[in-house]
Length: 404
Length: 136
Image 1: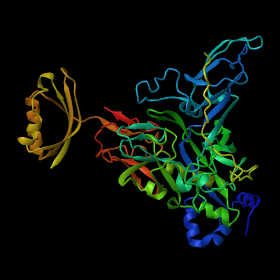
Image 2: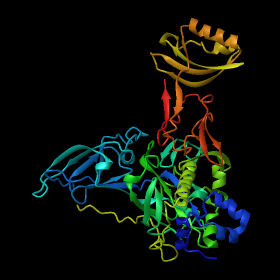
Image 3: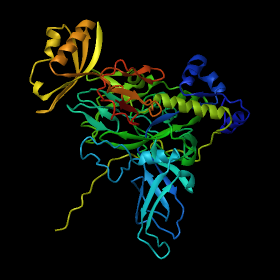
Image 4: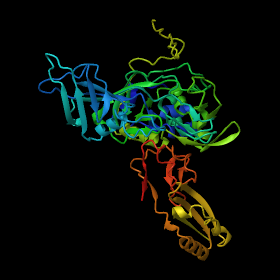
């Protein structure tokens, strides 16, 4: 018995929709079987909350008198450089941007206490930020300097626009070398001292819709505590990653580009983070509802941690040198038990993505749908999948030879 | 048997004297060195966890004081700012004493047991939202 999104939305409107999170659905399917559960369940909600480096926000800060054109000039927000290369008073601020006077890794490992991600959090939290612009001045935009406090409520637009979020699965990072290394997957102790993972596993949006049957361009999502949309496939979207029989990719695979109104988001779910020795980033909360259209869509949402496999990768050598060799594979149930085995050694694990927060997001989205505050959308276009999808490839360098 | 965490400051003229070993030999105490640093020609710092009979610990501390060592209780305290914590668990595999741990493997809730904390501060910087604080 197939359902349509329109029918599900009607049930949501009447307050009759059966909405469960991606953890609860596992038991429902185990108890009732796919056929019965597919009839009963209308929506399964997913969630994830972790550092997503390809995140950022664009702003229009409003015209000054006389007018100023930031384009071609330089802009700082709380001492963090923002991109000015478009029209007069539009800026883009990336999550990983460092403050201009940050010592970076000059004394290794650097602290990276503040950066782009933190500026975005400050804005979302309603705190004033300092905007400094140096412009070159034109006949139509004569002003050359600006130094002012701004607040998100005064900006004409403040839009979160992330080019790569919600990675479908990720590596489990370890360190085979004999010194501590500092990575975007956290601090890794020498000689397999720990193993860090970064996925919400059974709650993760794209792991619950492995072939992007329902999630696509135009899908309305829960973003940073507000509402957003899938804008496009994310950068490095790689549906060709090897998959298990259940469709789940065993390596980092699909990704999403997402967009949403920053003014309606919450600093709880848009949070600047610091990775010692690596840099700054932004923790982004994303929740995606999956309409249960048939048994197949339900079957994918019933995926369990033990059915999702990730690769164990050495971040001291294989990863930085772009080699794809892995030290082994492990399922998320084992990863989340607190200990995995690598090369015969028992290694304690840590999460970089927060499962507890992911569940809170999935539950918040569930409540909003139940209350009729969040309706489901039909995707406008699909994400690339199958043979026709572009392949993700490394850079083929063509070194430029200096003329003598 | 009781355990007591203390901070010892050795004046520079005492750095080369075997003072601490007497805690074992004469007072029957066992200790775990939590932190040690000696700056040449300056002074030495040692953070110890003493284990033993209460009376012996008191006598041992008296001995240290008589030798000119400054003895203070370990007052440095690690606190988790739970408003900032994202419950990611990055700290858990860094913490050498399991003071930071996952309380429940189903919900993956992170918790902190101050009793187990030795204030080594290894967790401070690996915490992405920098939610762990040192209080003096």
